[in-house]
Image 1 (tube, rainbow, N blue to C red):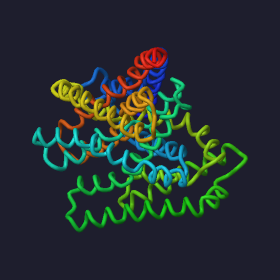
Image 2 (cartoon, rainbow, N blue to C red):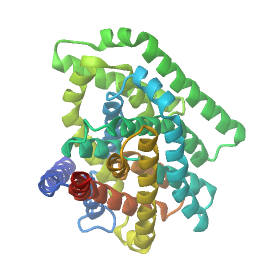
Image 3 (tube, rainbow, N blue to C red):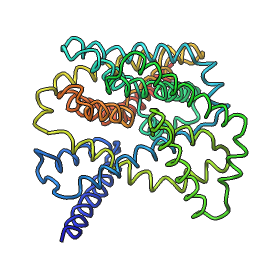
Image 4 (cartoon, rainbow, N blue to C red):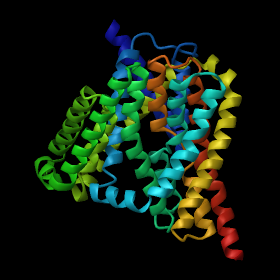
Amino acid sequence: MHTAILFVELGGVVLALGVLGAFALRVGISPIPLYLIAGLAFGTGGILPLATSEDFISVGAELGVILLLLTLGLEYNADELVTSLRGNAKGGLVDLVLNAAPGAVAALLLGWGPVAAIAMAGVTYATSSGITAKVLSDLGWIGNRETPVVLSLLVFEDLTMALYLPILTAVLAGVGFIGGAVTVAIALATVSVVLLVALRYGRVIEAFVRSPNSEVLLLKVVGLALLVAGLAQKLQVSAAVGAFLVGIALSGELAEDARALLSPLRDLFAAVFFVFFGLQTDPAAIWPVAGLAALLAVVSMITKLATGAYAARKAGIAREGRVRAGIALIPRGEFNIVIAGLAVAAGAHPDLGPLAAAYVLILAAFGPLAARLVQPLIAAVARRA
């Protein structure tokens, strides 16, 4: 009977996600806000709380994070990362300062304390690479001159997250200065070793993983990612970051084949991840912080527009391209929810989860819509010029 209820609940959740995803495609928005809303509906205080499947969904959510970051890492190779960091370090630092500050300042002004401030800095900092990549593709911006600038900023953010997440984990765990320093040192060493292996021995890793059979290739890639993710977590580095670094180690045709095989699996478990975050948030707790979330979202839009404009101007890109670069950076999603989830699990502050959920809902929905609305305006201005 217990298993039957589990299957019914899981079937209902997955079917509902499919319907929501179809609706999102029809209206041209990211499905992430709808998945979060579904989680709110199925969680505590929602319309139809789940009775038995929450533990199963929790494991699925962790797999979702790992697969999201693995496929994101497959978008880059180690050489591109190094080149990107060298050429766009200033833009990356401007991005970090302008967009981490609103979250940190808001937490401090609210009296949430320094730990919550560190978590909120991460929530407002990182752009959703997945949503941004989809916006660039859907609107035909992939070939534009500003697109490499946008992608380089996303790479900088991803590597910053590789260092930030271990620091956040140590802070949330309440370890002392020495323990925190050791955690950060281990994280730095782990990231450095993996990047070094990817740069010098990437072909060896690819030779081990490569297979003409799709089933074998999928098993090897996912198995390696889970193994490294587990070892990374043992070393007090985020499991998601470990999976991201595995993706970086694979490149070329192998990476393309792996992305194609992983995409359906990633989309399924990523949807489960967003639902799980919604399950942890009481819908009644969102309304008191909705105004603050909207204000924080407006500030974040302005700071991301400024970031994109600065980085694109440094690359000699015209005004229209600068606007597109800024708009492409607006969406929030994966990393922001991951960070908020860690903070909520550690008990950083009861309002942090609802605030992050509302904040991501706004920007995940508005970012793609803003890009679609501004695209005709930019084209009209360019024609008149």
